Image (cartoon, rainbow, N blue to C red; front, side, top):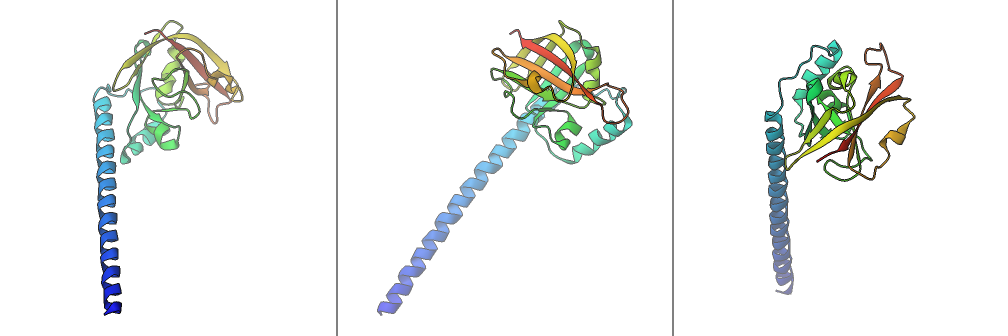
Length: 202
């Protein structure tokens, strides 16, 4: 009888443990699924406000990489607009190959979108950021997030060596630093970087 009692207690213990594990896993899965759905719904809201992409100035290879990138689901954090040069590009978290094939990426280690400091954003010179060749001091730059639109004014454009990482250093006020390779039409790996700095105005 004592052995049977121990087996019964063990069976109940295992059963309760399995039920708790199942309930916890189901709750985690539901929360994770809801979070993913919310993320992609937010991305869809941003995507609907993107104008048709003008790729007439892009390289053939960049057009191909851009189209291939749609095989993956990506959620942009914001849209970067510079109306004066008709630039509209989705901004993703990080500068991985897939993100830069689809649009622009926030450079790791710089301020996050909407936060104080210097937000670094990179994109390819033969794709979306080829439009930067026509940017001028005084142009307006907009970062459209789901909760707000931040306005900036371009205060400088410079050409630097790749080792000149000080352009991404923190700033006391909110600013955006756009980075792309230079020259824009260089064949091969471009040796320099084109930098656009903008400061928050509203």
